Length: 324
Image 1 (cartoon, one colour):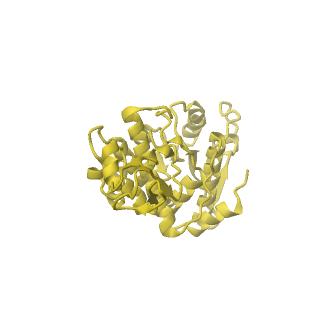
Image 2 (cartoon, helix red, strand yellow):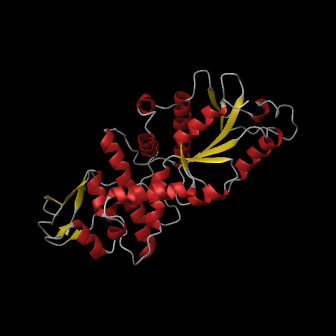
Image 3 (cartoon, helix red, strand yellow):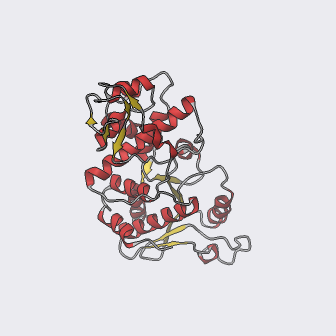
């Protein structure tokens, strides 16, 4: 299914802004989570958001949301920061909708697992919302998006981004039969497999093969079957992967069989990993008192893991054009 014009326009308007692109990709492929209800906690009269966070032993800091542009209202509908006017359950404006990131933690989880998942989802929402609000980006997040459709949409968004970002004359093609690639043609063991994405320069040279994986699973049989003939008959062509994987991001960075890995939002993954690693007896208020410290932690973690963004993918492809 082709991209809608407004989806293409969002990317076109922010080609040179990696963080905005992270928000666009993530927002359009939104994976709705039931843990958004964790933002609707109870406060005492006169209690601040941080105090309520500490009392409920939450794994996230409500200040992250207020810094991103969310406003908390008490049970009487009065906006507050310093202290609630009345006791009761709070609500937020805009409405809190979190992105489900960790498929390893069930919706029925309790205890520290629940604390970790909720903390990670709130952290990402705050980082995402801050980017969207600061750039005035209007993104219609889907309420329900089939997993298979999410993967196809990610691939199509990625292809459009690459086509708009790479030099004139370059081609970005997908689902090309492997038998149509020079060196693999007329090979008896190639079969009817197809590539995911191929990048071809203005001279007709195959620059790289790219796999788009919204999430990454241990069952990579199909991927391996595609890579074997390519690496056997065209070892000169690098094989890379672009992904939005969160819970397995560290493992992907260390162990993936591709030559290079690129992530939709590397610094946000770093922040998410940091929140997930928070011990059960540690306070997110003390560790990350504001959204900026959480973001800086994410930058540091992403750097340690060697996670690179899609903007680096474009730079790497362009630079490959200078290789003889």
